[in-house]
Image 1 (cartoon, one colour):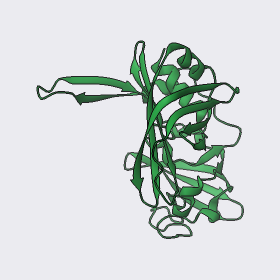
Image 2: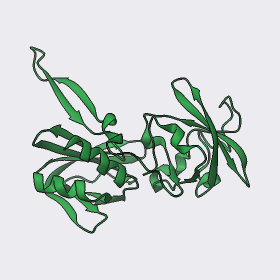
Image 3: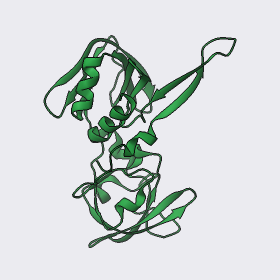
Image 4: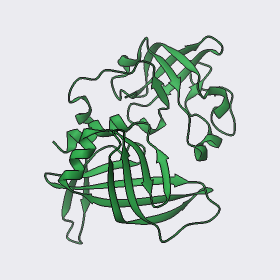
Length: 243
């Protein structure tokens, strides 16, 4: 697990390796890297963010951090690049593209505080429902409580045309087991130069045990599949929600 959320102090003195991005996201580059402490000058700026090739695979040492507008600025050093400053968001793990060399060790129950409760209404009389759910890390989130759970998964894929009529969800675990929902319907939404393939499925107790037993390594929605980098983090969120 690589993302410490609010506990940014866990990164001080660590080495961080910049992770690869999905092919569909590489053209957007990496967000949050600057050459100045005031975080105004983007390092090797492309159209908006830092160019992908300028950072992928680079290893940085975390020198220090300081508060910044409710979040943090992390000072990084690399022997070839020199000093960079990274805008760290304690609430947006999906923007954090680092592997901590050697990993991080978290105390039991550390991730439970990140699970959330959404308030929704379902009628003109404004009857509220309160639904607990995990953070949607890598577009995977579990909703529910007690014995009633559902999982929501999304895959973003570059394509020339929209594919319809797809169905099925499979989560491949690190231990080789699979959690499958062959009848799950797949909704397709248009995005900029790509499509979002989204599905949901009810999760039974046996499937829930599997998700708490081993991290998710790959997600398959219809005929679209993607590697999951933060499977261990997702597993910890699920273990907290489905105690």
